[in-house]
Amino acid sequence: MSKRDRDDEPGRRDFPGRSLLINLLRVFHVAGLAGLSAAILAGGGALTQWAALMLASGVGIIGLDAWANPLYFRQAKGVGTLVKLALVGILMSWEPGRQPLFWFLLAFSVALSHAPGRIRHRQLF
Image (cartoon, rainbow, N blue to C red; front, side, top):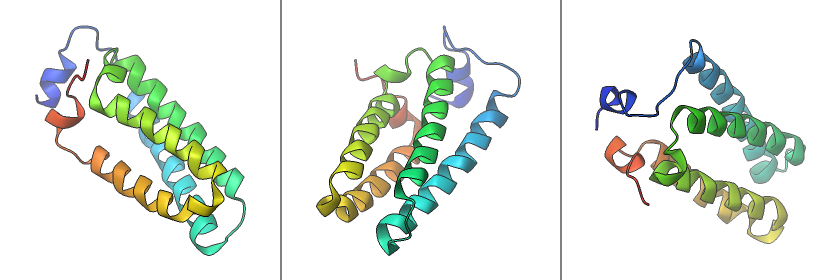
């Protein structure tokens, strides 16, 4: 399914500037990821603050995506995002497993984000 086909799906919504807003949120999200990475891998400190930045920006992205696409949480990308949120919660509370879980989450996130559209947009239920 091409982007044009998805844009023509019934129920899809948009507003001027949504793409710009999502991209700005992604900048903050990646900054939060960089800070969280430093805190987890190098003991850089401020773990909670970086996680909060990543969470707030991620929730903003999820909210915009779910608003624009009412099927979001029925598709692989939406379900995968909910799994990632749960795993981040575990990551924050489970210090002994933090580094391996961090690497798993990073790989899972990249695989999900860069999977072909036919996989990301597949309706699971």
